[in-house]
Length: 166
Image (cartoon, helix red, strand yellow):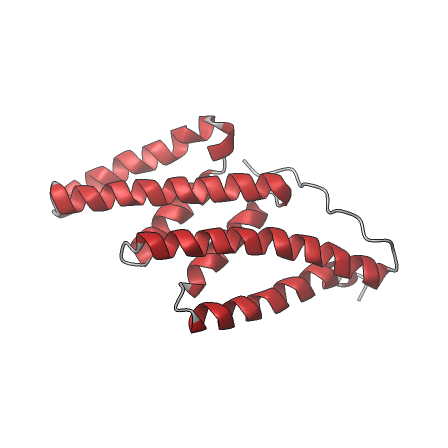
């Protein structure tokens, strides 16, 4: 139990919010799974306000580059070779744009492109779900810290920003 106790707050928070999100997103016909990808990116980018900013920015940049590819398919060529060349260029861009601190979370860019493709190019649906997922990340982290402080019998403290993964 000692290994689990420090994880109870975040576990309860994420579990409850995941259930609420699933119910609400299905009822509102939002793209449930995309928010979970963005939520994971929040934590993988380090959590806190830094993870929120870097995860969301990288996801949105990836969505943008996926949209660019979709426009190339529609307006230039839908051939397999053209698609492969566009993906090659975008893969390169997703890596080198990481020189910009806000876009330094490379996996988030690839995740953004992937969810855009995975939804059949549903731009508005993906953007809504990605923002929802990023917000669920910060809310779950902060709520988890409050719950954990109750479990530990401490006064609630603001969760410190984690050092982001780069």
